[in-house]
Amino acid sequence: MEYKFYVADNGLPFTDSTCAWFIYLRVSNGQDLIGSAPVITEIGGGWYKFSASPTFDIVGVIDAGAILNDVDRYIPVSIGASDSIFDRVASVFKSLWNKKTLKKHSDAYYTETLYDDDKATVLRVRDIKLVGDIETRDEP
Image (cartoon, rainbow, N blue to C red):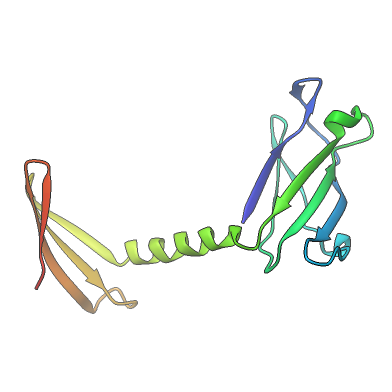
């Protein structure tokens, strides 16, 4: 999962920061994981990002640079093991969406076709009819 955070210097975007992990700990036992902390990169306009998909919860503090005052310098983060579930669910839906076609016959009538992984074998075909604001599906 990609995490994004903003760095400011007295309210203004702080760019070209050398953001680094100051603290990176496993929540359940306080284990120091700083050696396996993800790389932080700049997006632009004061925004930075890192990617992580842990199987356990992590807390950390990012040091945005000694030039900043302490209020702006240290940025707390929380990385949850369940955060990456949303990425996996989105991936499944995207995979399913890529296997589906919707053919429009008129403003009120469509045919939906769902394909297998090979994108050639038809798994299901159903008609979708719109009557006013109500959608009906004719299951085979």
